Image (cartoon, rainbow, N blue to C red; front, top):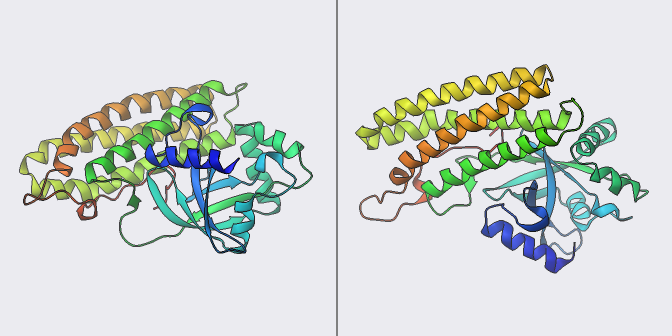
Length: 301
């Protein structure tokens, strides 16, 4: 992509927390910042990604089928430590180039999800690389690109809403009756992300709010029941995925979407005023929040 066009995407991506308009609306994109192989300068590039479970995502060095590898790929070969921006989260990652059968399996999944990758490979004699980005674990809560705890929880909720919308579209657009491997991974990554998010709320956020606001007890009880019901729906989705039944999976994704939207809306109504309530007359500080939540893209945190 031309540099000025790239910068427009980067600016919109950051301003709208990962949401893009135009040809990239609804696409799975992240911002990848690498260190120049020769200059040592930092360079940020928008790239498409695939969820891959196990705390990693995959990026593909297609360069639109160019005969040369993209600059960002040559950079990470020299300096494998990179920075990833998902729109909501920013984290450091280690880039690992997939080799041989592992690369071929991942690329096959990518083509299954989007045949455009095959068109790029057909345009070039080079084998298009697939790179796994492994998040580097660090102590403390993740870095959320938000100005307050309330905004952070809303943005994290929006990640789940967007991912569910993408999965529903992928199920509806799938050809034939097969439930593709990449689509199954997308669903399972979402399931794990929801589990981690609710576990973090139950173990840290809700006890903190209950101690600070005695009236929160009834809200906490309802949210806990909803977490249990959503977990049951997630398990039903897992079963449908394991049997590779597209109709059953679609039914459970629709049910999960409806249950989760109602839950998230109620939680935002109840939690956001408490999370952003000034303490001692001062403005709320995001770093003071016990929030420890994970997006579907970071399922092992």
